[in-house]
Length: 324
Image 1 (cartoon, rainbow, N blue to C red):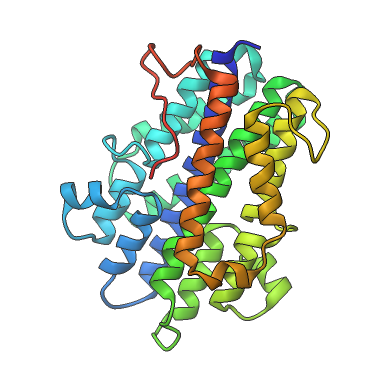
Image 2: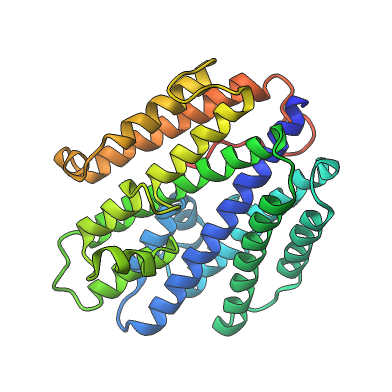
């Protein structure tokens, strides 16, 4: 497979995952803001910080309100991580590799792109329906590819992109929200906010089955280290590691290039991490290192498989590492 084709499939999957995560984050916090009275500025700041774009937001919008935050997160064409821009770049990457995808995959991405392009107004009801559409199409695409895409190199690159992006998004969610909510158990709406964190990762029901009452340390353990939950960081890294090794038929526990070594090492580290290890030096410090490790894994994959023929270079497509 050409490196530019592999690169486009990888980034198509990453942008779809990023768009779905952004849509869920915006929708959950839209509902939360309607349920909780009082000042919401700090809460919306935390939501935007999850995407790594708070500095850009403040320079352009100033103090966060529900309306400005949602506009920035969902439809802002100058925000490279807005839901609309992620859908746009997922579609553009898919367009360059249409012959490698089921025909319905292009139709799904194109339909949600057109819906975002024709959306006008920021009323909560209309925005809610649009965010539901993005989430539904992303899940449909994941199911379509699982049921229709041949298990060849293209499939493995899609899986690597999806699961690395998912791990990155969940780690950022826990990082920012734990800092926001730590030590605020007596505040009104504290439990609702932790539930919103779990909903943002589609994990509330599975969490309750495992742990019952919502509590910050258990939420962190569930989203970071639970090997059975398919959106936890540990699960996602294991899935990405399996997909990467599948490209070369590399046996588990070994590696054939620096990319496999970097991802395998990080996956093994998470597998033997306990919650006390996360909290010992501080949750933020631990997650900050994890995010740096994820960037190094992305760099190693790029060097091993996508350069020098990157599909994101020289033809108007953005080549981006996950936003910091």
